[in-house]
Length: 123
Image 1 (cartoon, rainbow, N blue to C red):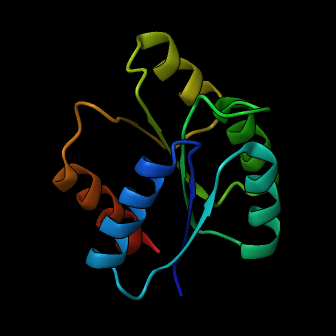
Image 2 (image 1 turned 90 degrees about the vertical axis):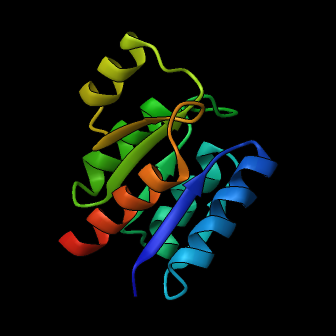
């Protein structure tokens, strides 16, 4: 079973992304986390293959969280999904070990689904 974790403090966005993934990938097991502490707990108990990670989170930010998760679980695919499409965030995401960087505002649903399909086919 392919497992996905959505780490996002915006409830509306998190639930919308989960709904899209549920519809397009019905066999995918999806969990949610609203902050870094909850995300780390879910990484340890749920064991996701794929994580959608926001940068701005309560407590530990998504970049630091990415670095920590990748340090312990290099095989987990992490997609930074953020409203902050800035070169410095892209560079930091790469430096901290993120596998992909997707701007929330300028990426289409199709691009997101294509990325997920690509990740699934690589597993």
